[in-house]
Length: 53
Image (cartoon, rainbow, N blue to C red; front, side, top):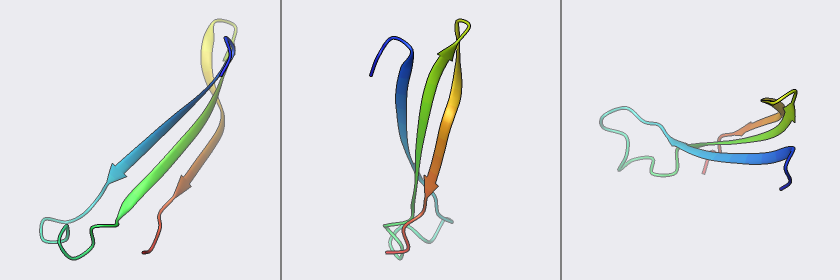
């Protein structure tokens, strides 16, 4: 995005051993908005979503 701002997206698949075939859509989506502060990256915004379908 810029030298001092960035975005990270992640997709986490989560299930018990028998669940993948039963619930293939169980995915936790994570988005982080980062900003550089004094030479270190800090989380400025965090969002999680878990669709039920």
